[in-house]
Amino acid sequence: MNWKLIFRLSLFGLGMALATISWIPQNAEPFFWLVIFIICAYVVAKNCSSNYFLHGFMISLVNSVWITAAHVLFYETYIASHPQMASMSEHMFLPKHPRIQMLIMGPVFGVGFGLVLGLFCFIASKIVKKR
Image (cartoon, rainbow, N blue to C red; front, side, top):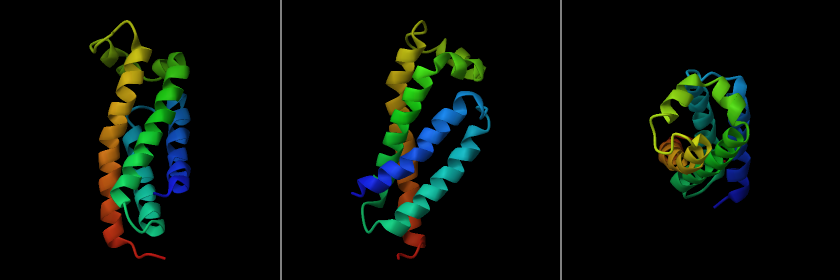
């Protein structure tokens, strides 16, 4: 496992975490994430010699730590610019404790998106030529 690469690529997640607090609207996020996933998959495929899926999976898990931490710490600002998230959290478990919801759901989303990024990395490893 190339932990240095995983950490470096997870900085995209930190950037997105900070950007989504007030700059990037919720409906535009998927497009940014698609570009980030494609870049990460390419870099993993180019720089790793094995465990492509696992590298992508771990990048997303580290991303989920960055994103969850930023959204919990800056909750008021985040919710002010993401009203859909506020209304959705009202209908989930612990509706009076949205920060706790985020702490619980962050890793769940990290695993889900880790499966997607892992697949992207695996597919990229079949397409991209190595150094």
